[in-house]
Length: 362
Image (tube, rainbow, N blue to C red):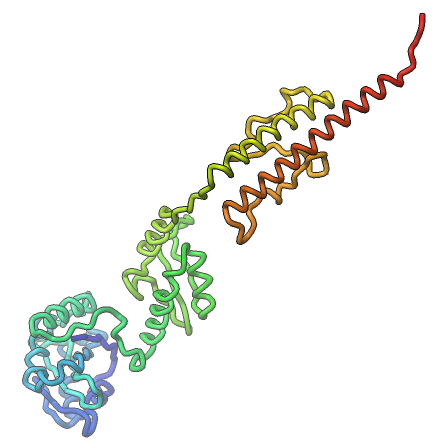
């Protein structure tokens, strides 16, 4: 059972709508004289004179039921449920018209009532939507009626604006949310579907406290679309995703591969140190401590003897862990050998230069 509060400003238009020719049946009426529309409208308007300060005296609510309940919803049953609904909603001691419509597959009826009561009192509409939802759930459970779970059960084809757009935004957010990790992701994906995202801020600060979604010249706060889409709920959802990081697969290497890499690293460190000593660079200025540790590998410039370009140290796409460690080991070994050759060549040149240096006699 679903109750829909319908905004109306005219008894003539409202009564004229519910009294569809050959497609409606009057279930109950009080304080008015059916079936003539003009007579009923006149009766309703006359009573509003008891409370002329009330700007809008027209009350209109449709009560819809699932087609699965059609067999049990006789006219008497529907009338009984509608009267109980009115009592729980505080719609009492006033004029009303209850009409069943026969133009749809699902059973439904329309309740038109005067918000000016028989004694001139006002039939309150304060928090009417909240009260309506609560009463419908209670009556659905009490009478064993079918309860549609969630907005997914709503027939989109029958919706009118602005509900049609509201449900389009609901469906879009629900579809996009599973693939979004942040507000930015959600904004981008909704924008692709013609949906705008804007925010409400707390006073003159930059602290966000609400979110608005817009489409087709309609704008809705997130909580109006669905409680799960309020700013607080969505922000909590994204914060939880940021805290939960997917586990990273730890690379597994064979003992032989690790041993080969360690040996190559030792050779590299030795050759690296020896090369700098051979060119008279103080050993303490050479940082070898970080080699093989997370965060850095001391590499000479790529245009230097034994140099390794940093991009060569990165794992390639499609390269297995074993292939990667073998390639890096080979690079380090080649670099170490190149530095050993460079150091030996430097020593040879120094020795040759010393041998050819002219001797000065005294």
